[in-house]
Length: 184
Image 1 (cartoon, rainbow, N blue to C red):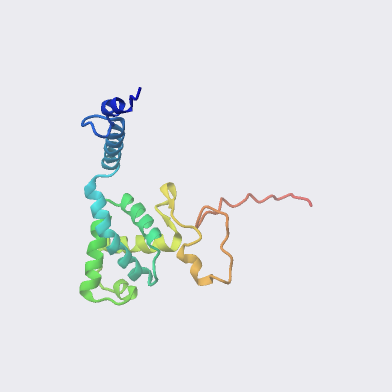
Image 2 (image 1 turned 60 degrees about the vertical axis):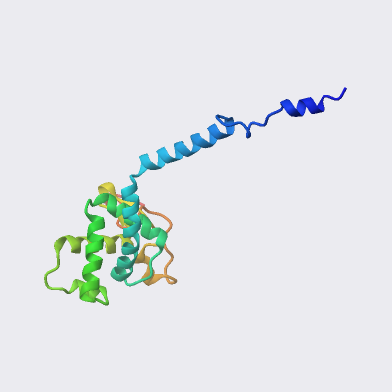
């Protein structure tokens, strides 16, 4: 007896039925989970603001340090600096607009201006310091962004080997106590 015909008629694929299937449930839960994770981790406004300021930050960094900048490091420096100063992104835009409006060609021209805005000057100094030291923040909350790619090592590149130890610039410990009566 051939039951293949009746078996084919009664067999219905899960994809053909509308409604809830395991595949649709899994797909929907992954999409909802990713959306919740993304919206909870960072508000969309700050993500969009960071993207707008990222190009400005890279251009401003190139101007301030007079060198090409690594985009990955630029993003890390921007995030660390922005985290520590609430008005950092607005200062980056204002500083870039000031430099463009006055037509400065080199950072020395900006630094030589007679009446600099203190907030913009502090922003410029923090950006230059971050790129040269590879560290953002004060010693109590310093964040090491780049050790071997810090700009302070560029002048001696190829002459001196970058040390592979230490916690960054000024990481020396306290001076050892002087032993008066030591015998060898």
